Length: 251
Image 1 (cartoon, one colour):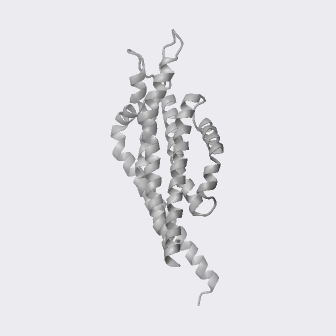
Image 2 (cartoon, one colour):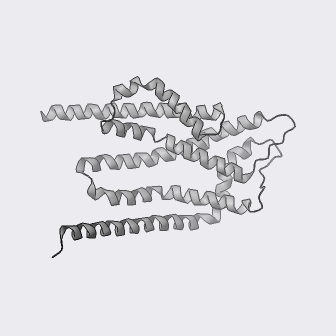
Image 3 (cartoon, helix red, strand yellow):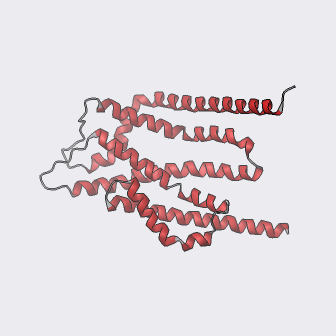
């Protein structure tokens, strides 16, 4: 007859085995996507770099300072693209692991939050690619001193692009963070609204830390962050209103 401590130990081992299996599934998914996309790695890189190439003066092009960059830059980008495409499956595995330990009302809330988180993260990357890049690269190239030929290095561009993608992807999660704070009772919509001036300053400080050191790029990140903060407050107000209506109906 096993003791309670032995049963707990077995349960912990079972959880660790399940976690290991789900991590392996996530890694396999990323590898499969990477192998499927690697053949088009140059096309993927060209697509991401297109706003910069279009902003370059006629006759100019990107360069590769490191001899290995023409191979490793598209390779690295393809890996990150594979990870992003596998994100919904990774979140599904995470959800499947933690769902048994959640209450019914927590499960009802978690699924929309997972879906919204993925959609917002993708939206942040799309905003950077389709809105930010064209404006920023056009601005930077237009202010180059006379006599300076702009020839961006492909590895430097990739580092810049990945930093911006990550920054905007995280920034677009603000509504989720605000909503969770309200749902957990850590803050109320009215109290968050009163702190709006501090939030605006905080958005610019975060933008300063996450983006290159120029006010133009920082403003393009800070202003959407502020707008998304307001969206989170609005969602929190709607949630609080529904909770009040349910409590009134139950009483």
